[in-house]
Image (tube, rainbow, N blue to C red; front, side, top):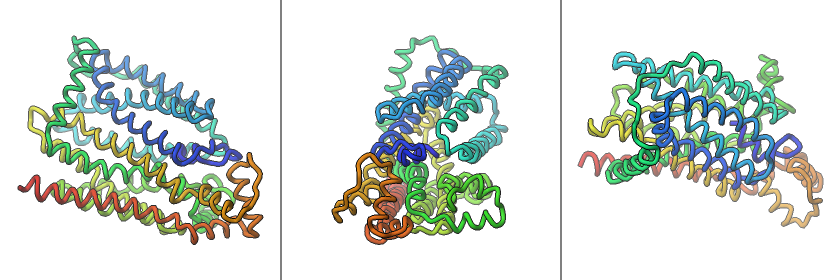
Length: 441
């Protein structure tokens, strides 16, 4: 979650000052690879053993976090992020397969429930811990490497679940994987469904790709800082600076809401039809994500994140459930294995939205450069983005807060909400048409 601001942040606070377009390309493609590779890495694990592949995954994962801060060029960081994604792609399918193989029909629900609970607990506490050291990004990466390295100890106690050892060569196994992809793509209805769901994931990933940057650049979080400073000073001290709360602290409320309300939302929609629940979830999530990008009021943003999380909690589990139901019994495992495709596509599309689109519509530095050019100001080259902003504010006889408000009122960076809600609502409409004309027909 800190990665977006690390890539685009000002160099005087440890950021790399990449453009939003570069950030979108790195995060979109890298995260997409993370969800595309498991279908291949899962086959590798089946052939060579879960424990052995987990060891390789942890080595890659740990070394990637150690190496990442050593690179500050676009090509170098991109390459290291892809390397990190390979480690995650090796790790991801093995854990899910382990849960599946070590639970029965009677215990699978509780097994996967514990698994997803752990995922969300990690998603919440990970940023909360690393945010304490945000003033030193190198330390954040090294702490992450240290936490991952703890898995080497846990691996000593890992028991290989029963599996059928593949006797095929690795090349023939991978060849079969691509044949299976071709087989899945011949199911017209399933492909249409996957493409529609990709719209949901495109919107979902704005939470990580766009929102942290948007909050940092535009949202006034001083009211929330004042609240915590008055009632819970330790929170303001650890997760705030210069009278504002860290953007990642704000965005992390999504994970907190999921921990608090997922069981309730799941119980609420448990007996509802999957497609109807997904449509409702898409609409709610679209409204929530769009509203996070409408205002500079942090309380409004938090309420919008809550709305988004409700839609996310309703729709996301139902996607997996629906895929499991529409597949014939002899193809169920195959279809579930390729349910990653919309996440892969959504990540790629999300990278474009948070990159090129955000760069042209909403990036604070890009809009300021345009304003400076229009006014004919001369600002020295080589300044960090923060110092550039301060110099521009000085030449315009405005405070930095006043300059932010000026850019907000004159360039309307919040208009990106129209793009986000259009994607979400279009996906919901397509899903309704899919249900009405392809399924019911």
